[in-house]
Amino acid sequence: DGRAVGADAASFSYAPDVQDVGTHWLEVRETYADGTDYTRRWGVRVRIPEPAAAIQYYVSPSGSDSGDGSLGAPFLTLEKARDKIRTLGRPLPPGGVTVFLRGGTYVRTATLTLNASDSGSAGAPVVYRNYPGETAILSGGKRVASAQFSPLASSEVARVAPGVDTSRIWELDLVALGITKRGPFPNTFGEWQIFNALAGGSAGLCEVFYNGSRMRLSRYPNHNLADDTQTANLKVNGIAAGADNAGTGYLNAAGNYTTSTGSVVPVGGAFHFNTADAAHVARWQTAMTKGGVWVVGYWRVPWQINGAKVGVLDTGAKQAIGLASGVSINGGIGYKYSRPAGNKAEPWWVVNLLEELDQPGEWCIDFSRNRLYFLMDAAGAPPDNSMVISDLGSPVIQISGSHVNIRGLTFEHGLAQGVQVLGGSRNLVAGCTFRNMGGYPVDLNNVSGGTHNGVLSCEMSDLA
Image 1 (cartoon, helix red, strand yellow):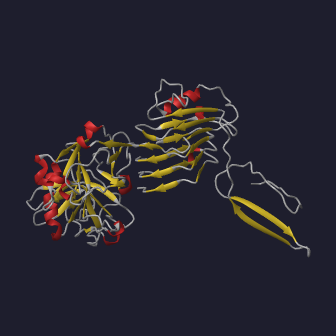
Image 2: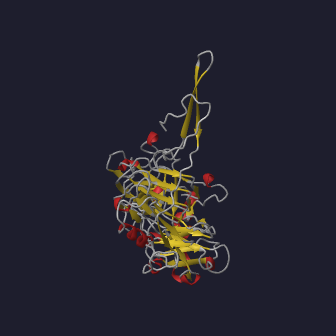
Image 3: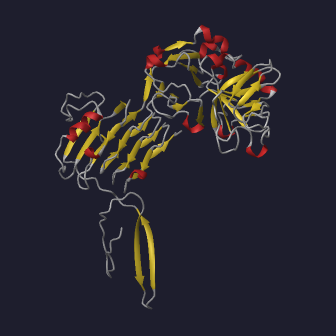
């Protein structure tokens, strides 16, 4: 910590006053009787003291913002507590302010923003923490009542894969439920952007959790439920020939594709599929007019994943799939070292189709009907509150002030970050739990000029 203590004493004590998160080092420089010097260093843990708060407020899921924020009349919202602290004079009294969150779930539909006007100081931090002995959960998801599910509409039954019990497929009206992250996908996207806010606004896709576990978006080929790292992919059967803009004769990128029936259509690229997959591809034709079809793949190198909207499904003799006109995969499709024809080994798969909903727990969204379809593992609709749909596409808490502590809180079901720190100094996230999150649990964005911000002793699990 840059403090010289002990001098030549045989023993000494040191009370650290530097509260940086991370490893602190104890360096001992020893001089022996023969005059030789030796230096030893140890990494040590430092207990960061939390001063007793001079002012305390309380928040409860059963509180009221017309209350005074006392233990007996807690506020309902974190925003009310934040705004109350803003009215306090600065500097805050020694010990600062602590907001205690009583046990229960706080459903977040927007980010709690803590800016410079919400700052504390070294001896008077602003602390948001759980009430001792209680679990306070900040959730970016919406719980679904059993009565909100409906059986699969009769108009969609014919789309279901052979052998699947249609009585076990249930649908949700996402508009009625108030879900904003319901798609559709953009024309192209990165694999790690599917469930995030993408371009902001209403773009992106929600996530589904059932009985506390993340459920899988429908996919062909199916997920390997025992080990998802072993999930199989399809293989491209060569890049389709056509009048391409680059003049190679192959549709690695934009050009015109001539279908098996002789129609000429503009595409963003086109490839052949294998005969073994023809029956599946043929069943996707209905989905083309029911919200669309998207394929995902390692189109050119094994470290670049892209999703793309399909414009043409040619199930005739040519057996080809054309990307939608205007769709552009960075670098084009086809293994880059086997251009232009490709190497017939490029991995790809299809996502989010009712036609491929065949594993219990899978789900998909029909973008044309704004319906979520879910395949149950048993008869009957999902029980009350067994399903949670993540829908918050921004950080649960965002801090751009200083000397703000987030302690002992549980964050879950967010599509973006749990806590994002944008600048400021000496902000601390400590003893929190992050689970079932779609973005970084904690994002210390020091690019924004932050210093001495940290994370300490947090538990993180089941992250996307």
